[in-house]
Length: 302
Image (cartoon, rainbow, N blue to C red; front, side):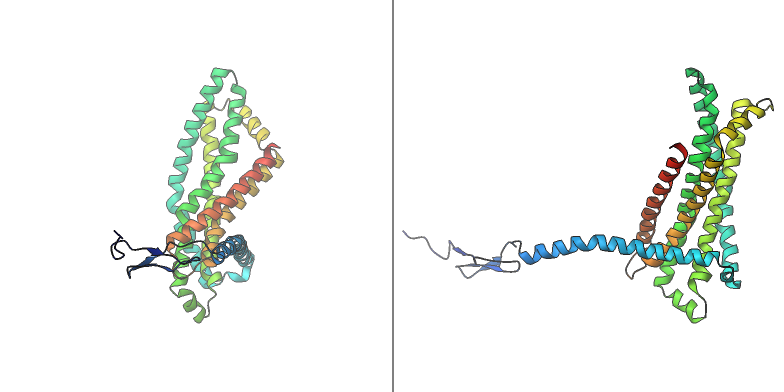
């Protein structure tokens, strides 16, 4: 007995079915065929993979160009007009004053804890003469400048950059230009300069506080160890190390202040969220800070 064609449909496939083709059933019904990879699909994937490095290079190129433009404006005295000075003074206070006391207290507590741990460990191994030098190198040379830069970035410059990206997408930059104001000189550059000032202020004050607390943690409330302490400090901060320390702190402050602003201007696209702009600025800033820290370590210890 022959099977019924209506009950047992025979599938007829096209020999070279591509995406979007249908499978015909002899019973009059049809269904979508499973897509097969084609040469055009692989070509599109290869082209997309080749474009990604070019987009990455173009993104960094736009970022570096914007940073250079902001640096030129910051170093030009003619950029500091009345509108710029008003915004600059407002952000100098708003970006530094609220975080100064909290960050200084945090550094003081961190210095006290690390100094105590290092001193106790050095006593147990008989290495007390190296303990104070290790505290100064670890805290003042390495931890405090990097911590101050990251603190300012997370609290001030990255939110300011994301806010600038939002203002640009809302058309506020065009309004400022219509009023005869340059948005870079009047709004963007003052925020970046305020970030540099906040980073340098936090780093300088915290280093002084850390040195004072380290002295009292080791020698107590006595001036007997002042001569030995100054000798250790002078041995650590020789001319080359002092120069590298100053340059590293300055470059850290420039990186955490100018990169978020430049990233907000270079990457502000319609449809991009404020959180996405902040995350992209954070990733780029971390990459630059890592390179600067590696260069400073190589200069100090090699």
